[in-house]
Image 1 (cartoon, rainbow, N blue to C red):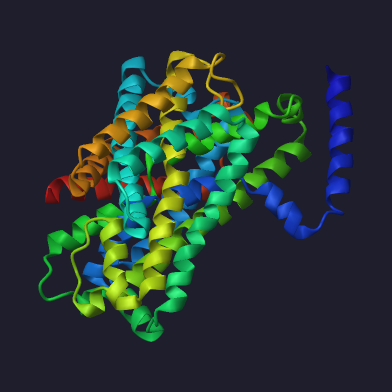
Image 2 (image 1 turned 45 degrees about the vertical axis):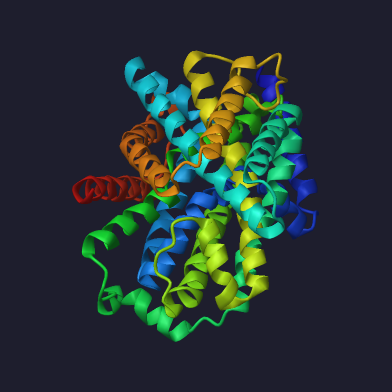
Length: 443
């Protein structure tokens, strides 16, 4: 065994030497994966609706929340990825090790409920955006998008699924395009972002502002992202047969932990920059023209048409479809990983349907039920509220357990999180705890 480890270490040093000769951009592209996809999936149609409402109602007064959540989001997502890579197991399997079974099952059940509600809202938004773009039946679009999301995960291998999801992240660049089209008063945006209390809308209530702060925090730091990124790191390990042994090689461990850090930094920063673009675009085009009540991402796109023109409308609407096609598989997949790990089922996109029937059954059920809820025109605001409530209930205990696991030598060995990482992790947990308390107080 020792000889094999030494041999693998030698091969790994040779790999590093060879990789050093690759072009930097190619090497960076290879490093990006779970973190980039997770960050992009955070800007789903439901999230777009939240950011659109923030911009249209409070103009630039909530930009500070995105600046606050970026380091916190990076810290907690790095932790989830680290847990998955170091232990070789997903987040639910690790939670089951340290929590009573009833608590684990309760948290996972609530995650599935929240994800299904979110899927319903996202598929409905995609269908509405497609209908506005090309016309047609909303129900047919719902069925089509639901089927496409399921077939993509059931029929494609893990490697192909990752490639497709990576390409779908490009859909988010549509919101860069919208910001370039509209004229952002950067000085005004900066001043109002730094002094939101001085520019509080006269007709807005403090409770409305608090609720929107909680909504933005809940959108950027969501439990389904924890489960997805941890499980994707496990999938990455399973594609490399010698990964378990190579983790004992210090150079290999440090290299891959740096890869996780780089991937997560880029993915989460990208996610919040896109969120900032949506807030800025809706603040400039909607709020400054008296439109302050946006309930869905589709309404935001439609409201842009007379204010910013057909191009901005079309790009915004296409972005909703693209981000939905990325986010729905992540929502359904994270639920499937969590349930399968809890019950000890096979949980991998690398396995076929016959080898992992329970895993794929959860993906099909979550997407199918979500699509069915969309057909019956689920109220988008109620869907977002209930999803936020359920996510709020489970996010804090999950984050507390994650922090405990990340600091546990029996679980993490010599690869426990650093003191700086602990500060950011506990800060994110504390901010979410306050946000959840505010949500219930102002409800």
